[in-house]
Length: 112
Length: 110
Picture 1 (cartoon, each protein chain N blue to C red):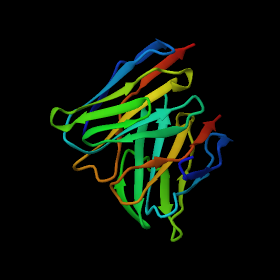
Picture 2 (picture 1 turned 45 degrees about the vertical axis):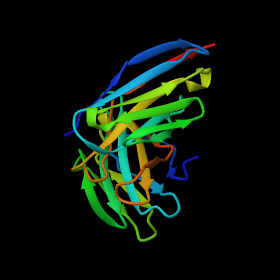
Picture 3 (picture 1 turned 180 degrees about the vertical axis):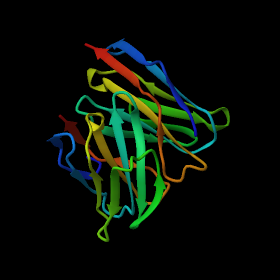
């Protein structure tokens, strides 16, 4: 158990819908990251927050957005969902903005 | 951006065998991590090793940053070692972003 928690574990929804994935970092970690794992793209970095501020952005679609709240938990919002958004979404956290990252168990999103 | 290549893509072993997994990267890195993704999808930290050598039980890793590669050694493999092994790196200009290789799929037969 890495100490990073993610909810829900599984999510099944229809195309065009919107969902919110939630992440709580390890105690004491200030930085949160979101990654997407799909069969065709592998593991891809989406976005990073550090102490509430966005610090780095990867190949995150405009339909996706994220934020980190004052209590340091983070949410990833996915809207206008498409079949291709089906993937495993991981949250990771680290103490500093550039230190070792620990991954949560992931949320498996299925878009039908 | 930085490129990460892992080899071999697939590896099949009998229990008790040893193996070496390789990770090559295209630029200098400030962070290198090895992960094991188990059959349930969890990513488990194995090593944080931007340079040097570390050992943890039957596993050890070496990163030669100047030559841009890292090796993961698994000795006396067990069926529970099966899964996908990922190398991930953070380049100097990537801030916190980790770039992952495509992974090595390891299958250990009893």
